[in-house]
Length: 193
Image 1 (cartoon, rainbow, N blue to C red):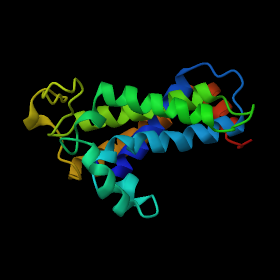
Image 2 (cartoon, helix red, strand yellow):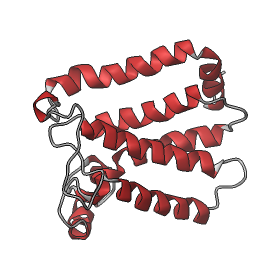
Image 3 (cartoon, rainbow, N blue to C red):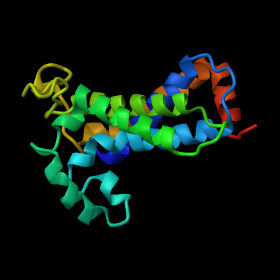
Image 4 (cartoon, rainbow, N blue to C red):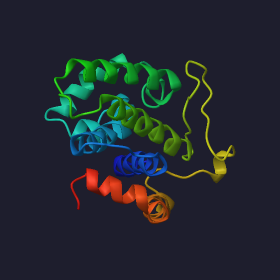
């Protein structure tokens, strides 16, 4: 999938979780930081790919990606696209959140889970592609859905561009309509009154 699809899927997954979860009191700061971290989490698995969207968003990312890329033995869609990668990057995110002076208005547990949900959304959307993902790395088995590669999507193909991205957006909007109570709480938390 393309970087923009992963970003939309990540935000969609986090918003969907918020709409399905009873929201007590979430601060505006927590809601905003959670959505920003969701975007980061949604493209983090592509750190193993020089020239990916995450590197394009970082000043000097092109050079930095070529320096860091040898760390990711095996290239694109290996450890970063697995359960092990999700645990490693989740642990790193937890360390970062604990080290940052975020104050009392930001619930770091919500921010952390936004990252994990977004990271997982990347793996799920890449499972829809012909290449699949090695969820069980280091086993060399690439899993995908549907299980038959011929039925899966081509990255940047017309199905991704014309169906997947709009379906994610429409699904979140429909769920927001269905769960309007939580949708209004989320909008209020984001500063919309």
